[in-house]
Amino acid sequence: AIRMIGLIENIDKEKQLRERLDSAEKTLTDAMDHITVGLQIWSKDDKLVICNERIKKDFRNFDVEMPTGLEYREMMKTFIENGGIDLDQNIDIDQFTNEMIKKRWSIENKQTREVKISSGTFYQIADTRLSDGGLISIFSDITELKEREEDLTLNNEKLLNAREEAHNANQAK
Image (cartoon, rainbow, N blue to C red):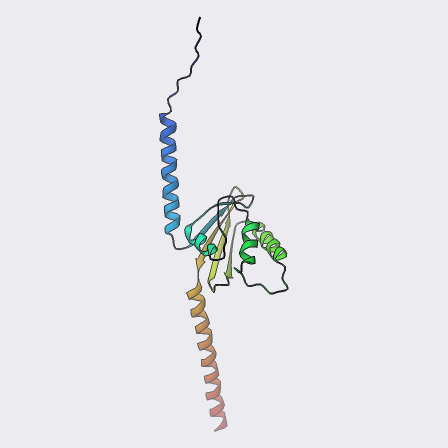
């Protein structure tokens, strides 16, 4: 006697779901790579979930690869060691990294900061805590804005000096 047990299951729905998921993932990746800002999404345990090509390129300039699963501590330490941020000689890299991590974990909602990397690029970084405890960071290049701000400050100082000189010249008359 032969006994046969089998299971027949229609996997069409599973295949359709997989195709929809793959399509949505490709669309999301394509969209992220075409926005003008850098984007990083970190898990609740500070591991990289995803980042866009813009931010990968910026970090590659300092020999930092950005694979999924990269730990934030490792990424920052390598970035700093490779000259990504100009630190004073007396600042300990591990201590600086620990301070950055503390600040990240203190973010409850949203926080915005400005950072200048050693290439001269200024970023405004907007960090937002996600509902699962992760973090999304959006990097906006504000270098041109900072340069214009500096130019305006210099021009304002020149105008104030000229005004003072004119005032002094009038007083001397």
